Length: 302
Image (cartoon, rainbow, N blue to C red; front, side, top):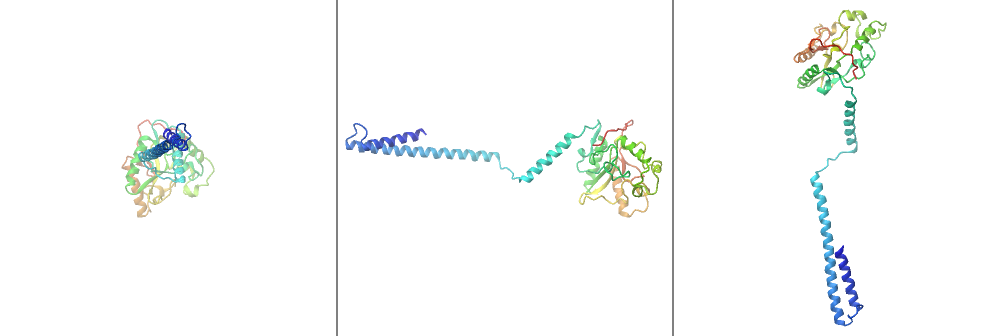
């Protein structure tokens, strides 16, 4: 800015001299010489001012480009994609943050094995009672003793190498749910009899061992599950549905075809390889050995 002011002053002086407005500059030769010198000086100074301005602009542009290059390219993200990603992450974080802490020694199965599918039937009406069972407030919060959950995670890893996975129907079962089953057995409601226990009356379900008054599920080491294909997401054919009370559910029942027998054996062997033991009357029922004196628990599954 100072250079430009000096140049402007020089140009004004050149005009003053040329017009004879400056006292003592009336001689023609003096006026012409002074005017010429002033004009040249003004042009030089004006050119210098322009050059300085251009150099400053180039330096600013170069600094900005260097800063952008150092920062690196920013990955393009569409508005919808970015919002969806942020929403999913926020939802997961909120879900974990709002979960109630589990009692010491218990874990959420999917914290250890995220790819295991969970479909807790007793948190829905799709079970032998036809009702949502007391103590279940989530269809996805499968809970086990930590050692059992860790062993189940290893089973999942083994099965994934074969393109298979696990789907959990029940895990930890609070004692209030067992009490709910007892109350159901004393009621006259038989709406689910044809589907789940066509060959028996309710009291026989306890006598024959299909429902227990004290369940191993309440200890936190027992789990009900099946196999699913990871490519299709469909459960494998086990020759009978979950929670069906009858000989069809016995692990070694007769009348299964070759594929059904093989699928039951595959589940049995995978679970047994990681320390679980199967309950013979139910192909889906496995228990992990827990320390002597482990006590049943009654917290809500949520």
